Image (cartoon, rainbow, N blue to C red):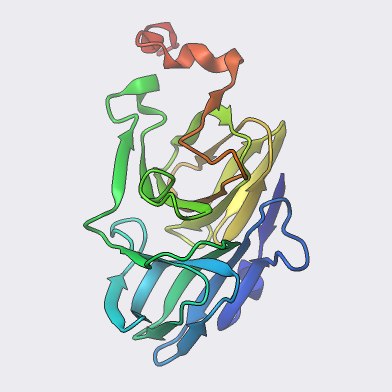
Length: 266
């Protein structure tokens, strides 16, 4: 497990968190945060890599292959996302119409396909824990932009989780063989939480990134602070992530329908 936080050193433009050409940390991906101010124009054209561009917050015009989408998202807590997935050699132009921050994820992919813009109307949302499981302690919203089911042509998966204050997500603890990254956002800059991965505990903060290569993992947000994180997975050759989840057998009882009856409630 590796955790990075570059919030204090973020600059205008592209901020690389994972550079696969130097050290991919086992993810087989590039990951970064793009910070734009009003009027800024940023362009991509990757010769070998597909690109996913997720708007965390701001106002941005996306342009590619003659298509244009004007996207606006004040924040990732109360508003749904726009996410562009494009194959190698696609010319992408982003024009900021105000301060904007975007999550960027790339991976090598030899397949050519038609770019896809995922919008608030097409986001897949699962309201996990909404029926009071574990006394409501793991209630969260799991949002999937693209995965093997709706984008089998991609070598990546990308989504978001809205982790409510004081609640848990990626819970009960689980693992999968495919590498995963988490990029954290908090509704307050000083917000924080905690992550658990392969027996290690790490503190999460605004614009922090965790790399999970193996081992059981889960996380929580501190009371008073909402946490929203992008979760990105790289398919393994011959072993794509198909909602793969291997639960920790020590905590498997938490999935029982009557689990609440066995939890101390005072």
